[in-house]
Structures are given as C-alpha cells and as structure tokens.
Picture 1 (tube, rainbow, N blue to C red):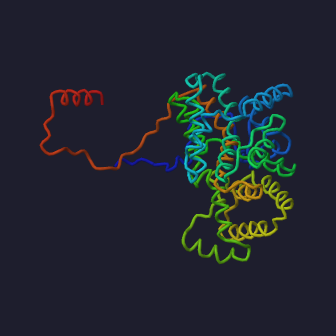
Picture 2 (cartoon, rainbow, N blue to C red):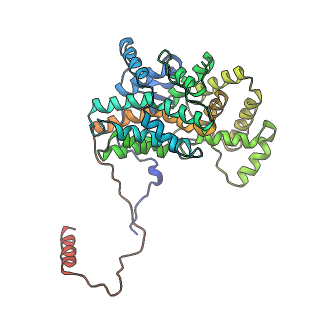
Picture 3 (cartoon, rainbow, N blue to C red):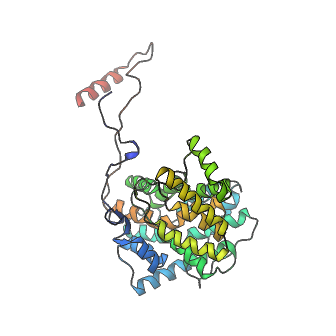
Length: 389
C-alpha cells in the first residue's frame, strides 16, 4: 500500500466554505449567520430563525408576516401522504415513516426538477410547513387516536403541539419546545447536512437531498442520540442507581449517549439554554425525580470521564415531559434541522462542485480468472488505459 494519511470520518478535513453557521472558538458559541444561537433562542421565533438561515438576515416584520401566512396555509397533509403513512406498519420507526412521507411530497411536486434558488426556497418553506403534520399524524395513529387538523390561528410551535396532543399547550411548554427547535435548527457540516450537500452536488433535487439527510440523522451517533438518552434514563430508573449502572456500563465499554461532541471540547454551547428550558418543564410537571436522575448521571459521568453533555442530553427528557413518544424525538429534530439542511442545499447548489473524495485501496493485488482469454476489444481498451496513464 502507498503511504497515505487516512482521515477516518473526515475528521479535521475542511471541504468547503459556508456562510450558514459556525462555532466561534473564542466564545464557544454556535453562530447562525453570525448571531449566537442562545440570543436567537431568547429573542426570536422559530419562524424568524428559519428565514435567517435561508436568507442570511433576520426578517422584517412584513417578511415575517408574509412567511407566517404562507406556512399556516400549507400545514395540512395531502391525502396521498396520509394514505401512504396509513399503509406503513405501526412498528415502523417514525424516522422511516417521515422519510417516506417527505419522499411522497417530492414525488408529487410539479417543480421537483427545478433546482433554481427560488424553487428550492419554495420547497424548503413547503417542507417546513408540512413536516409537523407528518410527525403529529404518525404519533397519533400509533396511539390509535384520530388525527387533529392544524389551526391557522396558532404559531408554528403551538400548532405543532396542538396537532400532536389535541389540546392547547401551556405557555411554558410552548416556549420550551420552541427553544429546542431553534437550538436544533442548524449545526454546520454535521453528518446529515454533509449528506444533503453530497446529494445536492450531483444536481439531484432538494427533496432527494432531504430524504438522504433524514436517513443519516436516524443513526444513534447523530440524531437518534436524543432517543438513546431517554432509553438510558429509563434503564437507570432513579438517581440512586446511577453509580452501579455506570460501573457496569463502563466496564462493558458501552457508549453513553448524550455526552461528548466532535466539535465542542469544552461542552456544547447549546446545553445551558436547553437545560434552562428543561428546568421550566420540570417545575411545570413536578418531575423532580427525573431532574435528580438527570443531574446525578451528568455529575457522575463528567466526574469520571471529563466528557460533557451535548444538546441531546437535555432535549430528550424535555420531549418526554412534553408528552412525545420516545421514537418521535428524532423526527422532532428533523422538523427543526430541515431549515439548516435546506439552507445548505441552496448554498451548495449556488457554487456547486461534485463531492467525490478519493480512497486508498487495500484489497488484493490484481488477479485474473483461470482460463480467461482476453478479446481484441479488451486488449485495445487496456492499451488505451495504459496510454492515458
């Protein structure tokens, strides 16, 4: 083999520019188009943050009003999407259901092959409006509940909860949920975003790129981590069990989901904001036992390993308290991250180059089939290849 340095997982490899987001190493802050995400979560609606990611600037009052009117008028699911979801087994993972539903929207779209910036932005806005209904419809059908139609008088986060649970959520719940959506909306060249950009680089349509990104997000090492956090907390059961459970988990070399991050080495900058939102939910629901378990595991694991929580650690318990089924947590991530994905898709298409990395071969040397006789055409092709090299 040749002496080539392999960057497994593309760790440390810079592949392109982006103006969508970055982590500022000086402040350890995640920036959306230059704005610290904690400031956006504290002051802006999720709808406004979506427009910021797509357009590069926070919207004017009129721009926000126009987008809200559009989004509220496009929330309802098409009959074909509902029918397709109903055909899927109830034990299919919600991410598989959501991936299929998005694919149906794309397959039905008249402008699917129009990859112009205006057309792609329109597709992004349509998916932004439709995905909450897909997620809510699927959770309700699993529970044997009738679907709840969207309401145009409710803002995005409040309507999402309305469609899922059939009740108007208290303000503290709506606020915590909206904060989570803002925090999950974008995070530079993560695995699912890079997947979307790779697919876009082939000049495939935006819907194909989003479907591929959903597939990448499903994995436990990426979006599925928020589900895994809740499974871990359920397995431990109570704060008193943390020490013995962690002894066994570390001895078995289990990966403790919800801790550590490829980018953040001093702790995920989004965690304090989400933890504050989780605290409001703990108080609202009287979930002191869950809070004690959460704090005990964090203290024990950080104390032993020096590895800090990432956003999935507080968001999993928050979604649990709100009432979402654990398998639905990652589709909630999709509802948020589709804004970042589509911003990157539009950016990739605007300055495109096919993403096609090299690899170093480490298989058998050239070998031949016994008794094979090369034809004249084979020999001529081999000669041409040799000359070209």
